[in-house]
Amino acid sequence: MMMNSIELRTRVLLSLQSALLGEITPNVRGITCRWDTSEIMIVCYLQGEVSEDIEESMACVATEVMADFPEHQVEIACKELNEPEPLNPYTLSAWVYRRKE
Image 1 (cartoon, helix red, strand yellow):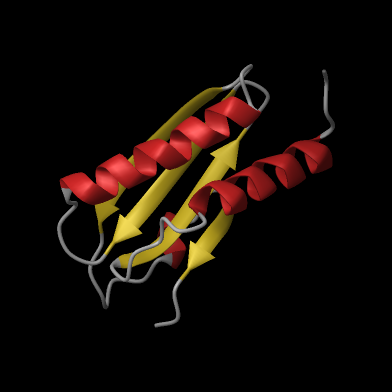
Image 2: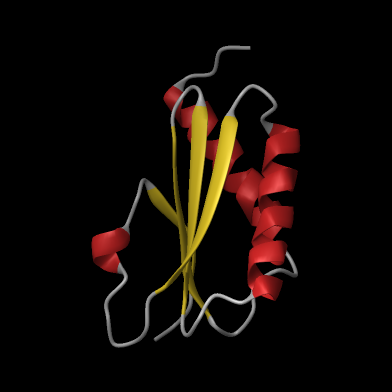
């Protein structure tokens, strides 16, 4: 099924919002993403080091997004980015989550 860019944006953001329920921990500063007709990239920025638990949690998020977009390649990355380093320079197409700082 071909979608226009607005439909794709809406579906990606809603899919991620649903997949992230219960997966955000206090050390998550922000989650940004980008997409096109064949790929969805998700990047999670964390305060402090990237633990195995958060990587496992974000892998579950990616799996849920894959279920919604079987025709897309879905990739997820977790990166350390400590305060006061700003998040704005790391914006992809949209922020799915940003904590108040």
